[in-house]
Amino acid sequence: MRKLLTILILVFTIRNASAQLLPLFGGTRTGTTGFQFLKNIPDARAAAMGGAIIAEVNDPSAMHWNPAGITKVDTQHFHFMAAQSSFLAGLNQQLVGGVYRKNSETFFGLSYIGFYTPMMNYTTEFQPTGTGQTFRAYDMALGVTLGRVLTSNFSFGITAKYLRESFSEVRTQSGVMDFGFQYEVGKANTRFAVCINNFGFTAEPRGTVISTTLNGVDTISGFEKIAAPAVFRLGIACDLMKKKENRITIAGQLNHPTDNNETVSLGGEYSWKENLFARTGYEFGQDEGGLPCFGFGVKFKRRFGIVQLDYGFSNKKSLGDIHRLTLGLSLF
Image 1: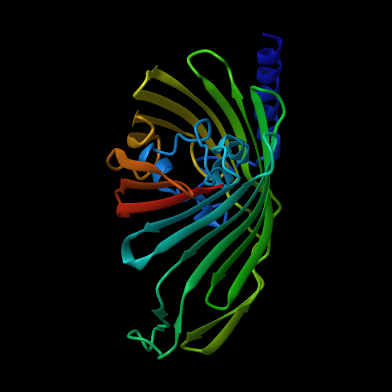
Image 2 (image 1 turned 180 degrees about the horizontal axis):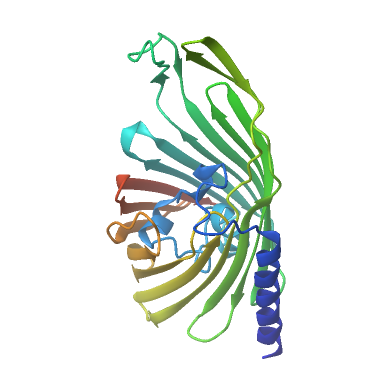
């Protein structure tokens, strides 16, 4: 009881601190940050559960969601993950991550997220079909994560990330931090989690933009500073049923971003023998709406370790259908 009280005090302290540290811009706060690719769901399992994952995540994708989650990986020493997300108009995003389990208390991780567009033509008012030159937008995040098991019920994680956003000749670079913890309550295998993602400083875009007008050519440089889309998340997950072959897990999550309205994510996962998985979920309060998310997964053991393949589907009003595939591998 004393441990639970301590955790609750810590949660409300972090929540109040986030209100002071994470700026609010009034209204919906839309369009007040950069590095928007960080808001995309990068992996299939989280997408299928509507993003309600910070209390349930137990694989290398935790380095994006809640760094404390890397302490929940399987007992193998090396864990790898690769994920692909396909959007309309040829937009793609990849996640690649690896976690090393040093011992039962200390875990290290490296992660990469890349988001890019296909090559596009430069156009002007006088050359609307193209100038013959091409460009593309490319965003990336490189992260280093440390996870620690502090007690049998409590784990903590921290991630340092380098961000780079490129659009034509303009580049923006920044650094942010993620902080998170997971706490196992002990009843119905209930897990509780809190994290702050993308907390950092503002960054100034560098480069020049050439604009052709009736008066000639204008060169634009010197841009307004931008911040990363920081978000405070509070989540809980529990097993409604856990028998020999069947498990049903539900998860809920409150999302408080600095550049949009708050949303609530709800998700569920059914497991048969921890080998076959079916998932569904929905994020309430989002601008895009769309259909409920769903997905499935399969896990099987081999001599060299464990292989897992997951698929996730989501639908947004403007972005249409989004498909995600994730491959996980645990070795030795």
